[in-house]
Image (cartoon, rainbow, N blue to C red; front, side):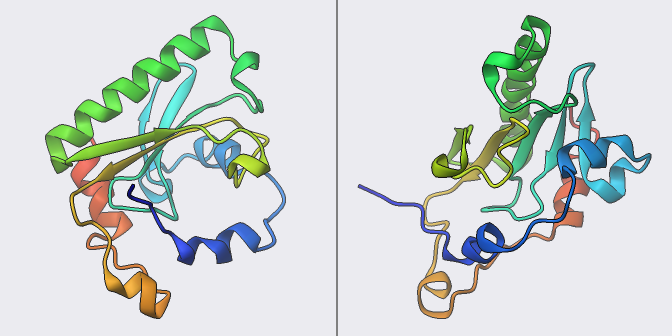
Length: 157
């Protein structure tokens, strides 16, 4: 069995979070490039994860601030998962990953860093995408900066 180890994220998980909700605040601002918003649908949008596991780590979120899938309207839910599907196509076309992890963390015990606003993570994976740096130095090596990833994915949706 393989494991995804991400010990560098514990600092983010345990850090005091600022007031407010970045998934509400970012799309309300008028600067998608600065906020790394890649696509806007009617009910949901796609943003780069600011603390990625791998380059191309996306988040799909509804604009509406709700905590659970059961609170999504039918229209929100259909568009949300259509955008998740579209995101996998974009990542396949641009990054050619060997696989993808797609997940929704509902509740703090399930790993939700922001449990008040439901969202879906899409993480590209490659064979051998982990290395010794994480294990021995508590450092994660990401071969692409957020701005570079944004440039590669912008306009591809």
